[in-house]
Image (cartoon, rainbow, N blue to C red):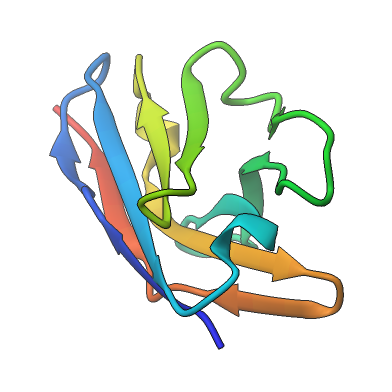
Length: 118
């Protein structure tokens, strides 16, 4: 069992930056593929970025809409995954969710609100 707690959301002006954090409790954090997803009002939840586990291999993956602006990273020693968001746009406004995935098991955090507005 993994519990995920997101933090770092808030209100930011267009062009600004935010750093989201997702702290995981439980065992085996390094085995999980970690990801950030977001859901805007009236829209479906969408993938923002993923970072591979020590088992899955592979590379980080980003939605086209955030490439070059967002960066996902993980610190397995701290059981934490981050999302650095730069050059934020109003269309980035959403609830951002952290996800941990291993084989057929998937866990979600409660989400953190990001609002980009002047």
